[in-house]
Structure formats: structure tokens, C-alpha cells
Length: 210
Image 1 (cartoon, helix red, strand yellow):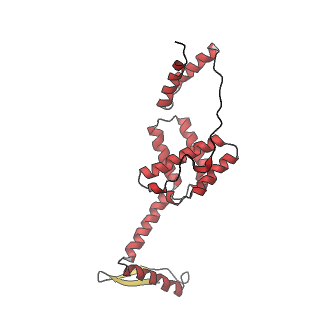
Image 2 (cartoon, rainbow, N blue to C red):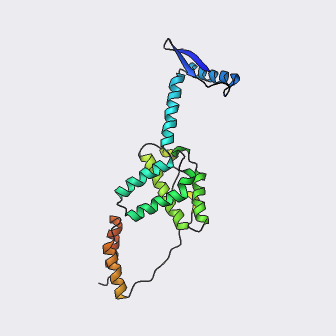
Image 3 (cartoon, rainbow, N blue to C red):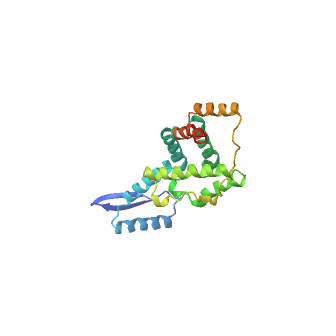
């Protein structure tokens, strides 16, 4: 079936679909919808082309592709260690990609993400759920920053999923000279994030007696 019309005094044709997949009644209904577009001053072919382009962009703009792009940029900007970068990506691969990785960013519903977080929480891995939520929050913000997601569609924040804060654990101070020396050597050997490294190097100085 085809819808024929004139645009700028030239004959134009828009394919509607093939028989028998599209019945005569459906073809007529579709043709009327295209005629309504023309009545509104729109070219049906241009409308279809724009829709196809939006669909193409949506297929490329999936959560997984966006997350991997954010991860690559964050690893470079934040100078993550290889082990930490692998851990962040692995969390997304295990806990998120299987459920919403193939969805377009703008198509993801809050409930779909919340279910991902609750699956982790219900297995008793609250800290992992917190870390996954933080990573997803960065992915959504990255999508906004690069212009592929409207700011109003970014619903992820520190309250998403209603996760309770992880339980605080207090560790005893190291008083053994040998163990303290090993700690200082480990701090000097740390090659991860530059801010974390500076904080680790500074922390022993804060507790020295005057």
C-alpha cells in the first residue's frame, strides 16, 4: 500500500506497508493519519525521516553504551587504578546491564532502576547497592552533560531506591610499631586517585602528638 500526494506541486509517494500484513482497512486508516499531517502543514515523508532518525539515535543511546562512555571518561579524568575501574564496570555489568542496559536512556523508568538496586540490597549487599546507585547517578548526569538526555528526565539521586546508609564500622588504632610502619609503606605505595593518595598521606600527620 502507498499514500500518494503532491508536495510543492510534485508527485510524492509514501509506503504504508504490504498486503496481507496490512489490511485494506488499516491502510486506509494509516492514509488518513498521513493526510491529517499534511492538513497540519507537515510533509509525511519528512515526519517519517525525523522519526527514523530519532529511533536510530535511541538505539545508539542505550544505558550500557552511555555507561561505558562515562566509565572510560571517568577512568581518565579521575585517574582510577585499573582494579578500581574494573570493579566499577563489573558492578554495572552484573547488576544493571542485564535489566536496563539495552534501553534508551530516556525510556528507563524509575521503578526499573529501583528493582535493580533492591535485588542487590535483598541479597544483603547494601554497600554494593549504594555503589551501584552512585555509578548510575553519574551515568545519568553524564548523559545530561553530553546533551543526550533532558535534565528533567534525570531522576537518579542519593535517595533513589530508599537505601539505608551502610552501617558504620570502627576499627581499632594501630599501636604495634611494625604494623604502623607497614601501613605507612602501603600508603606511600598507593597509586590510585590522587586526592585519595593525598588524604592517606596526610592522615598519619593528623594524629601525631605535638
